[in-house]
Image (cartoon, rainbow over all chains, first blue to last red; front, side):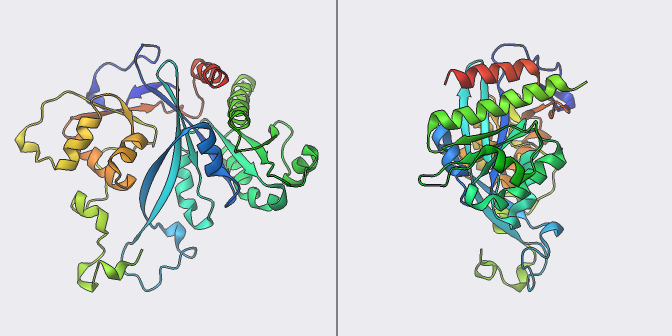
Amino acid sequence: MDYVHSDAAAGAPAAASGGGRLVAAKILVAGGFGVGKTTMVGSISEIRPLRTEEVLTDRSVGVDDISGVDGKTSTTVAMDFGRITLPDDLVLYLFGTPGQQRFWFMWDELALGALGAVVLADVRRLGDSFAAVDYFEDRRTPFVVAVNCFDGAERKDPEDVRIALDLEERVPLLMCDVRDRESAKRVLITVVEHVLAQAAARP
Amino acid sequence: MSNDRWLDGDAGPVVRPYTLTRGRTRLRNDGLDLISVLEATGVPVSRRMRLDPEHRTLLALCRRPITFADLASEVDLPVGVVRVLVDDLREENLLRALRPTSTGDVPDELVLRKLLNGLRAL
């Protein structure tokens, strides 16, 4: 991802190829509540806290009960994000999307500029992943589905999961254990490979 | 969050953390992505600018390029508040933002390859 100066007064644009220029990339980790998003971010990256104070928008009307509250109000949402520092001044950020439906107004901001996404799924509650799959399909954000295999969780045939989630053939699907660093790493590599493949397939 | 603990009816639609921004929630410059990179311009601070301590802290953290998310995490203030304070600093030309290009959804192939190699080497 290139960076350019957005401030008109900033003068010459920064050369993306120039040395010493911080380049940040973002991958989202989505999925239902309690599926292991925070665990995955923690097993692969340095986890950092972030506080968001968001004004409730009209999109949350009817979702959040704001009756009896006059004027604008806000809600504080604590979220975690992970940071992986790579060579060449490259930093990969992982943001877990809020699992609860009432925080969905935050998704658009998080999705902005994301290169891709992971949808974490739990075979016992596949339905919890539908919303995230729909969201990324609609936005045309490249995503992979990673089935988190908890201890003692029933092993499913990946093809059954694909059918259950109604996934297109080109969407990668893999099994993982989010507590395991190598496994979490494999998931992220799959996302980047998928993004590259998508970019190559574009006319 | 219990609003009535902090506000009574006379207070109006005031949100506590935004007292730091004197109640402003609107931005003069366009919004920032969480991974937008911020950097101090090196323009000297003058007294006319009336900077708060929070402004100075943010400015000091931006002496080296830093992402908006890291900045907000570092100062432990809500993202929305940091957004307004950063906007003040950009307005005074003390900070500049380096943002993903408008084609941000189509990442640079070179960056993706570097990312892939970096992840594999972890």
